[in-house]
Amino acid sequence: MHIVTEVLETVSKRNPNEPEFLQAVQEILNSLTPLLEQNKEYQDKCILQRFVEPERQIIFRVPWQDDRGQIQINRGYRFEFNSAIGPYKGGLRFHPSVCPSILKFLALEQVLKNSLTTLPMGGGKGGADFDPKGKSDNEVMRFCQSFMTELFRHIGPYTDVPAGDIGVGTREIGYLFGQYKRLRNEFTGVLTGKGRNWGGSLIRPEATGYGTVYFAQEMLKTRGDSLAGKICTVSGSGNVAQYTVQKLQQLGAKVVTLSDSDGTIYDAQGINAEKLDFVMTLKNVRRGRLKEYTDMFNAEYRAGKRPWDVPCDCAFPCATQNEISGENAKQLLDGGCKLVCEGANMPSQPKAVELFLAKGILFGPGKAANAGGVAVSGLEMAQNAIHLNWTREEVEQRLHGIMISIHRNCCETAERYDQAGNLVLGANIAGFSKVADAMLDQGLV
Ligand code: NDP
Ligand code: 2IT
Image 1 (cartoon, rainbow, N blue to C red):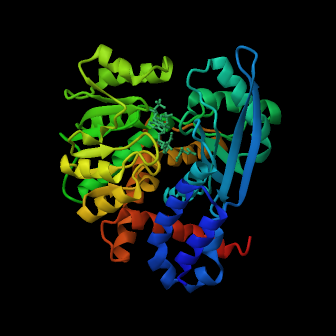
Image 2: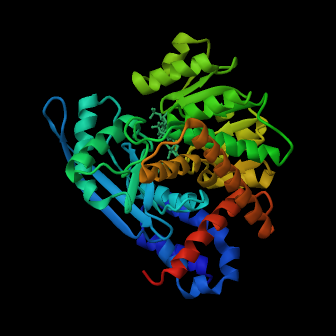
Image 3: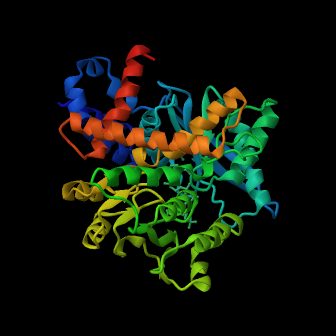
């Protein structure tokens, strides 16, 4: 039996009822086939079999009291997936849908993404099935403190360095950091995405969105094109979506949609800087729903809908996994879309990816396109380690350089395997080779 088929079978037997994890494993392994055929040592040393099994899985109870004094119980997780090239690194997600399948797919993607950044970071992911929506600041603080009271014994600046993801932003990182510091009596760079007055890096909040747009810019350059004047659809309205919109504005594109889990706003006039300011206050300070946008500005509200039937030149999915179905991909192509650049992790379903590649449009897979966030997290770790802060300009310049080099690496790798333009294959092979070679060097661990 072919090694890829064999490993896929073992993974599905060993991880039943984990559709998202299997989806990610399948996509990655399919890309790796040509590499594995050439490299006998990976097979002899069972690199692939080891690669798909997390190094450590931590699951714990998170008890806390809500504002009415009621006791609540959530489940907390940290999947420490691979530490071949650096300490485990990756975000924490707080969302009711959080479960092992979702965190394991995210952690596995993170391993390859972190490898692509050029910085020394392994991969991990964690979080809880806690829903921050509708909770008071005090409830979120008590939850974060309880969560860290268990997590602190598993992490450290040279062991595992968590950060934000869906439902975890500067507020949550603050509460988590405060509790870690209290328990350890140590001020270290154990988390990234910290506030700028207490060890955070400038540009970290912007990094994922800005990086995604820089990646799109590089893809367009290969066709002699640019973002100026392009009609863009963006999904989500959280951290990644907001700074994707901001950078697109700066580069002269016109963004016409945003969304949240209730629906989509379509603003044919374009979301300008003033309108984005409103969205940022609405989502980050008042923590309201996007529908309010239509009370302030002239825009259409599409309840329960995603943005993909809106005609566009470029699409930026920045909300969550599997938000573009095969059907949505057809709608995008019919509407004239020529570029899809993933700010979110695995937002395109396999059928959608297949269609984008078959039609030859520019497609930037999340593990490459959204790597700017974790890249600047890596820069935050570097600044913490030397006890210095770099300027905005310096960090943004490094981020831009990293995104250019990730794009180049993915393109060159795809060409080397006779798949020019297939950045899915390029990202998977380039990300994997570095981790696999490090695993070979370090022996059977
Ligand atoms: P936020 O929590 O800031 O925002 C998430 C946004 O997506 C919200 O608008 C939310 O709407 C929407 N959303 C979340 N879940 C769903 C769902 N099931 N269906 C529809 N909409 C949903 O998260 P981020 O912006 O940080 O993360 C967005 C994506 O980017 C995720 O895939 C994340 O893994 C990825 N990412 C994040 C990075 C980072 O640095 N933060 C780095 C790289 C990737 P609502 O408010 O209604 O829940
Ligand atoms: O998916 C991701 O890359 C993140 N959520 C950011 C991880 C990080 O450690 O900054």
